[in-house]
Image (tube, rainbow, N blue to C red; front, side, top):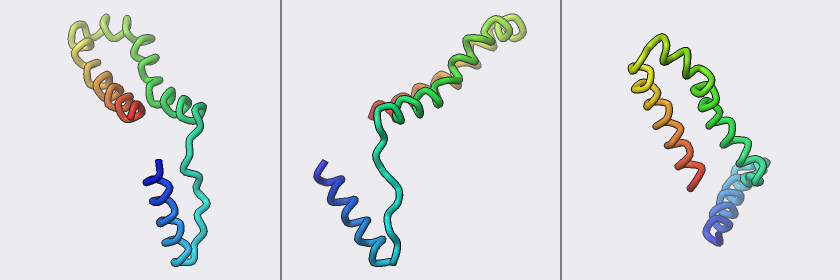
Length: 82
């Protein structure tokens, strides 16, 4: 945590030397983090709601095709689980 504070202080002083003031808050609350994670993972709801239509129209190809977004959502979950 100390390294982050030192890094932020160094960046703020660099911005000050350039004549700018830091206005961006770099802190996310627990609710902010949850809402961003929910937004990224909400395509799973679409997969569940269209499952019957996809299987009926595409058959087994739909199941194999769904691996692509599931893997993508897994990577997003890994990023948020950092």
